[in-house]
Length: 131
Image (cartoon, rainbow, N blue to C red; front, side, top):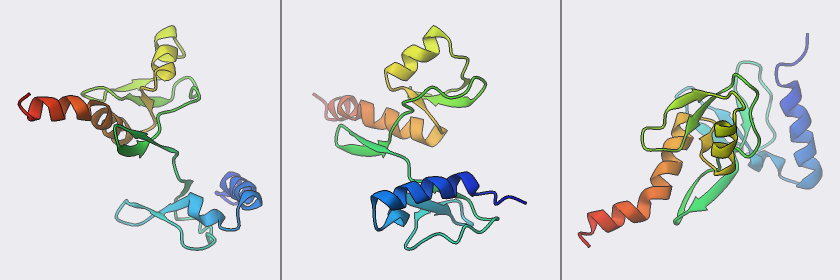
């Protein structure tokens, strides 16, 4: 039986070749659902979720997870960083590719919502400031 984390372990080993503290690039999911940065090498327990920390960007002074840079597989569920963060299915259409190129396609609803908030922060500050 193969380890369910086999692919992640390979990626972790690549990280380890680049840094003496590869665990700082990784997270595990606690029971309550929050992702937590590791403080040491992962134990790769089968029932625990692990992931490489998402890349982040700073938009208008707000750090958020970066939108997707590479097209997902056809049929993958994605979210748009627009006001109501709609979920859509990636079909690799010209519209999908334009959204990707413009940095609007996110892996999760939370990422899309955070990116939308960051992108619109100056407008909300302007309107909220009564100018």
